[in-house]
Image: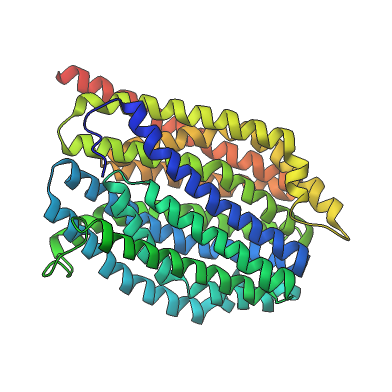
Length: 444
């Protein structure tokens, strides 16, 4: 456990955010490796099928993480205020409610997969394998929910290293299983989905075992394993807004994927490859934002308002530094990056399209660096409505710009659509921050 209410803000953020970033890199490396293995050992159709299924599963996963992020803000406040019993009750409430939520999502997902894919206009030649892949992946929803709730509890008390270890292990296990069963033994796309579910189950079991053995003070005790209705209400007020915010992005991606699907299998394959690089840019930026959130929430719970601005400034500097790194790597190696995902007949067109997209995004990645930083600040301050409004603005405009630009300039237009959404989001959130600071200074 790490108390962030004293000591240097930058040091706390680095120690907290770096393990989260490493964990996300490992997770993203698995996702990329999964696509590489699917594209090279199963074929272009498998790569396109995974890309078509990804927005649907991302919608589910980000809804789950949205609720657990909201619960994590509450747990951080309780930890900063030294309210240990409330912290444990909040974790129990999140786990139990999350179980029922994930069970319902799994059943509905299995039932409505074909309808979802028809709505997304998935091409007929990959429709059947996409149905199989998505249905199997839905079976991992309870494990995803369970792990994220436990990880939120650990992160709320400043322990970001332990979830990193679990992600590293499960990601390496997943890649190893893919290489054995797909690369060596020649199994198809169903095996790719099954190994993903297996890795999710392992990470959830490891997190549960660690909590019981090493952190009994955080583990709910006898009589606390129940849904606390007042806490559930607060969790839903925080978590539902955060979940809706998290779900906005994949909903937007689902709508964008429909436009991508209309452009043909080559564009679908290229877009699936380059969105893996988008994840490498944006998800670690979200890790830094989560560090900002935890730092601010703990200090807000402890009544240390003097430390909030210092933590936010340090977080924005970290976001900028990460953009310099990821933007440079993307610009220099965009063609080799896309070449990892596809080979053989027709691959040159896929590589050309993907490299074109990444060339623009290398510059544009600075925009989500700052949008994530401001989102972390507002989430830590408990202003979930602002984070939701900003995300709605960004996502809706990104979809609109894609519908306007993609039919005219193809995948290149999707990159500029992303930039347009991020710019307008910043134009909304930055003035609100300075107005809040001016109001606080006027009251002091």
